[in-house]
Amino acid sequence: MSVLPYGTSAFGNWRAAQTFQSSKAELSQLQNQLASGNVATTHSGLGTGGAGASLALRSRIATLDSYAAAIADGQFRLGVMNTGLEQISSLASSLASSLASAP
Image (cartoon, rainbow, N blue to C red):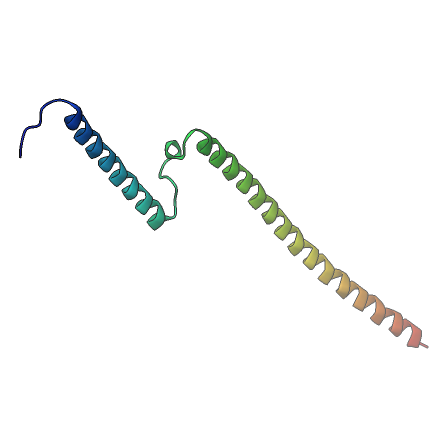
């Protein structure tokens, strides 16, 4: 290994090494993102606008999930009420036919 004089070529070599190392680190980060499917492991890794948007979207998703749960609960209750009304209707029709045929 030879010692280069401090000057343009030394700076050029140092800059090329820095660029190579940063490119290698960026490649490693992109490979991790691709393998995991996540852009970042923490909110700070999302950048200035990404963390706030992520938190706002999580809040919105939680709200929509609660709406979906309320709708499912309502559908279940309506189904039970509908079944009860069908049975009442059947009993009323049976009673009406029994009363019509009674002497």
